[in-house]
Amino acid sequence: MSDSPPSDDVMHAKVLVVDDSRMVRASIIKRIRDRFECREEADGEAGWATLLVDDSIQVVLSDLSMPHLDGYGLLERIRASHIQRIADIPVIMISGDEDDAARERARALGATDFITKGIGTVELLSRIESASRLSKTSRELADSREALAAASPIDPDSGMATPQYMEIHGAQLMSAAARYHGQVSVLIVGIDNFGEITRNFGRHVTDLIMRKLAKVLATKVRKEDTFSQIGDGQFAIITPDISLQSAEQFANRMRSVIGATAMQYRGQTLRISLNIGVANSLADQAESVSQMLGLAVARADLAHREGGNAVRSTGGEPQKFAWTAGIVSIERALLLIKSGAQAEIEPQLPALIYRLLPLLELIGVKYDCNIPLDCLREHAAEADTSLLGKQQPR
Image 1 (cartoon, rainbow, N blue to C red):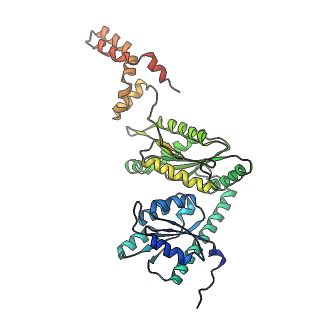
Image 2 (image 1 turned 180 degrees about the horizontal axis):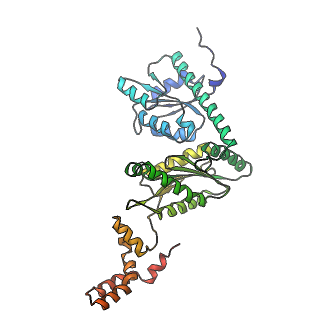
Image 3 (image 1 turned 120 degrees about the vertical axis):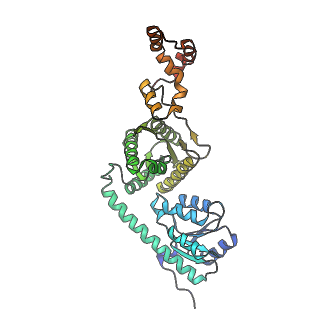
């Protein structure tokens, strides 16, 4: 008895098979390739990279035990993704000898279904067809939400563009760029250690930080740019008609401005730094805004894992920067010392002594104090006018 013919909505669905066994991948693909388009990867990291750049994948089949990034890690990344098409994608886990606890862990992380490596062809096709229909329904619902967002593009709470409108408008910008030989850049701006700040200070403090950051970023983007919050501690900017180099410079300016900003909370100084991922349609040969968002998210995540306070774009080393806020005032220095941030003041002590020296000399004369003025003058000499000129406030 022959298999029933596949329906039109699943015939051309693309399936990503992730397994470190070449034999397992070959076996699965051989049995499903007449009904599904297939891609394969040998570990979770490679599978994740493929998901970010290939927005036509509708179902993922993943082994649980793999090198580099196992099935649990891949599943967790997928469900935590800020890109809706990835977060909603059905994931069927390929289990071998794993016990019930392993399956329960995968289910808790968001696994859609489970199959064994020895599953029959008919059942395998049925499971994938069911998952692809689920994927198709999810995408249709997402399209409906996007249509509604297009009618009301502004989030009433934040005043920024909705993520749905951002993707719709981004697609329009990509279409115009292709027609007129232009280019589009995408920036993902994330706050370093956002989770740690939330744990240490509470959600209300991170909400204040997000609002402050949104206001600062809003003053930096152009009228033709689209700016939206896409998750906790993360913003996206789509900017047309600028090159990769210009987008990097824009990202560095934002990083520098935020790096020089501090907030006071209950006597403590909160210093904010950013991880920024940049993608460009021309440099990355991207065909969709969704693909660029995926690349920029991955690069921002990489910048954060490598220590943060950095801009990461196509290839090369991340562009890291140390915090420089110019010469602080005496009042500011005292406030930082009281809050326990002496380490930030120490590099600027010669400049502070230079400023205080006339006052210290007057105190020494007036009250006949044994202030070690000669020693202080030597240190103040380090803050010669050449040094001060290099650190003039912007």
